[in-house]
Image 1 (tube, rainbow, N blue to C red):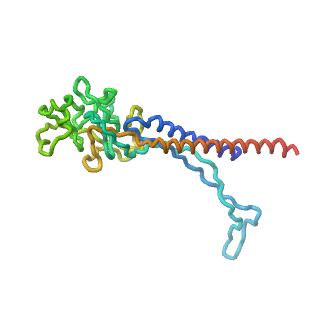
Image 2: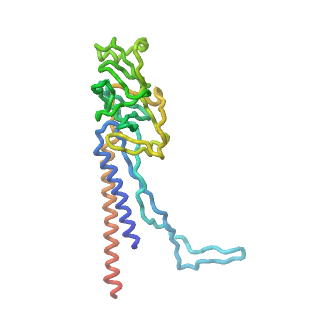
Image 3: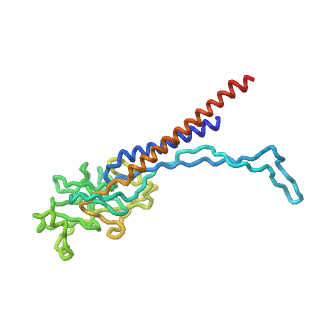
Length: 282
């Protein structure tokens, strides 16, 4: 195969994968808890070029050396390596809705999806007719004891994920938001949110609908310590960590790189055509 055609084609394929990741990020810029993807490519090993017209070997009493001078290296193309997720913190947006929860720091909420544990950073939760805390699609949010049963406007969640309720404050929903230091002992602890993390979260698999699932590479879910580096914040939602301006700039760069690789192929094709039609004919 002609090296120029292969190099240009491999570059176009790599840029196409970058464009797919960027387009997906921009499409999900307003999705709560979304984490952006980035595409990574790797270069093939470079080829060492020497000037072969010189005498290639010089012998002396103790051995020999190669005297063909090194001209430089020649790139042999690039290939798509992987697309992985960047779990950077997204901005926190206040909603004043007690069912909205955000994680500040590492970790994931645990959700029971048809009997399987899935993980999410999207804290847009509701309470169903049975009094269970669920996602917008109706999947139960898990605590240490299982599904969390609540009463509407009668609960509060602290930074460590502890879920409390007290009928004394039920008539004043805003009262639970401003619990004083000496009032926590009056509340009944129901459960603690099951906030987990993974040894290698970059290998988590995206499942759609803001869910991830664990893989063999990511390791099993481990309980995340809350209260210091990781906190649960009630009445807030975490926005996506996508910067639309940077993504648009990167998209322009990808378009230009794609066009440059196109021109490489066109130029190589034109030169090959001249060789076949003009030089060989002479």
